Length: 164
Ligand code: ACO
Image 1 (cartoon, rainbow, N blue to C red):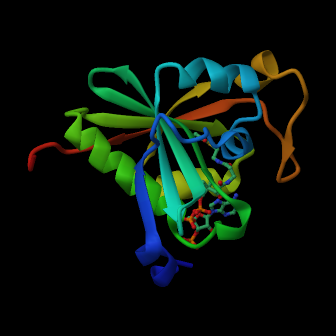
Image 2 (cartoon, rainbow, N blue to C red):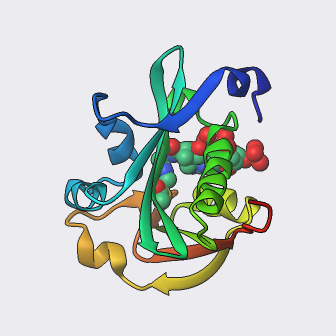
């Protein structure tokens, strides 16, 4: 449920170079340290703060001039389910428009039922399946919602820059 009071009190902005990278959050969304450290090199990290404490993060990677990829999105567990994820996805749309990108992509596992629901609810459409992505790239089996995480489901949302 949307917590309007909480959303009113958070501040979302790009992380500063003197601030610590919120690795716990990043690894919550993507347990592969290898993958995270690789895409962080060329990405922007955006954070949500409450009372100056980081409670959520989002990593944006410029895949191509027209395409921004949300590589990683995470909300601290005690703040999940209160609308921050949706707010970050909206922020990503605004950032994409500001960068004159025409679309945003995001990938998640076949077993991430809540995430697939959230992304489709916020306007993303499934475009592609990277078969066996998690089997081929992650050393340990991952089980979520009683389902083995095997394939990466890719979703895309077109954004409109016509009003910028
Ligand atoms: N299980 C069940 N439902 C979920 C889940 C889930 N894991 N995640 C989101 N939802 C649903 C909520 O019930 C809510 O539905 P409603 O509005 O109809 O009630 C809706 O999706 C949106 O919820 P928000 O409160 O806006 O999302 P939240 O602040 O919880 O952020 C996020 C969503 C980022 C997925 C958060 O739950 C999280 O950090 N999860 C752990 C890390 C993770 O899985 N990150 C995404 C991996 S994929 C990637 O990073 C590209």
